[in-house]
Image (cartoon, rainbow, N blue to C red):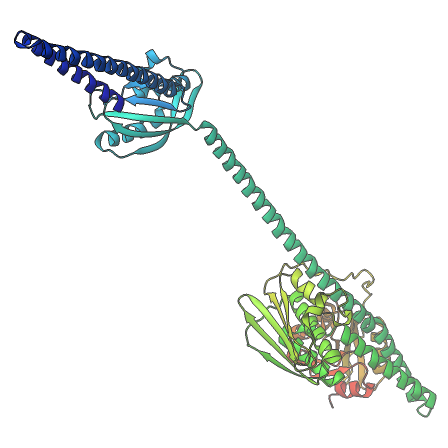
Length: 573
């Protein structure tokens, strides 16, 4: 533009000089020859300058033409489409790229309404922005779909600005259109990939949650399986070995009554009683009845008493009084954890006192066992050489399996605090019922219906035939006592009481189908005049209390002398 202005100034100067020369020529008649010569010289100089100015003007014009050609070339072959839309919305100009992407020849494109090339669903978008552009000078950038003549629609990003047209009218819209179809496809593909990824993440999360629940269920099943095995061994000791020993002792008692001075028989009786005692203690330690019949607090109280009697460890129990879960697997896990941690105090703490705290916090049960003993370095538990005797690694792993945790706060010579946290709700697996195929229903015993005045009619209830026969042989021969019948479980006992109406029921506590506690409760509710005497291989305060609450008037151990049972039956106990 600057070169164009310079050329115009040179042309105007030359015209002024020519006018001056014409005016001077009119005055030649009054000039001297010297003045004429000077004037001629001056004219030649001006002629040379004018020629130079004309040459410069032609050079500038050539550069302008070259610049215009370069501009038109760049305009036409730019990778971006350019449109000029007039105030009416018609296309006034378009570069070659614009005609290419729309697949319209330039001659046919110019004069068409720009809205003709916009997808029907995006017409409102164009009209909104066009109105805003014509009213303001704001820059507008938006996306819509343009329609290709042959290939269908495609996405474009439009950058628009109002400008003056060639006539100076400020109602022209300059549009730069960029094809973003590839970008849109990439965005769509990315969205689909994200959706697929989110779906996969959700699926993996569900799988992880499912596997976590499966792992938790397996951990619970392992806890229950271990406890079932402990109970099986304890039941074997109770149901078979102890019953046989107790029956043998009863048979031996009968012989001792015949030969009271036989020392060998007394020694054998003493050995049998000692064997029964040790067998009872072992079965009791393997599977304490309190674990099946009491809540968690009572179970912890039992284990604290056990550690005091067996190891001299004085343990304080503190509870927040909240209602704790009575889920059998969870109760068993916490009971065994407390047992393991207290054993750890006995074996490694070097102290005679400890503390157990039980609390409920934010949907979890927190069990902590603390002492002021030797302590340990918690980091050693993560080493391959960690002492296996502690059992803490196994306890921590099992806690993790049921989505719990075991935190150890300890240092050498500064005591230890083991904090076990487990959720109140864990995946439960129905307890597998022990097979009863080896316990065949026995034919009911022969019933004696004759009732003699002053005779106490006794019904013997025990799930072991050898035990029932031992009791019948020992008690049934005593004066004033008559065997009314026998039963092998709690349900059968209720039916026998209904049929026979005995005076006394000698009731075993631990039996299948229905235990002695439940059977006693039913009998006393329907026939309160029937006396019930409880028998058990295990001397347990909790079981004794439950039997007395159910209505039993006495609770005896099967290992006690038969005279105690006779006193209870006669009513003198």
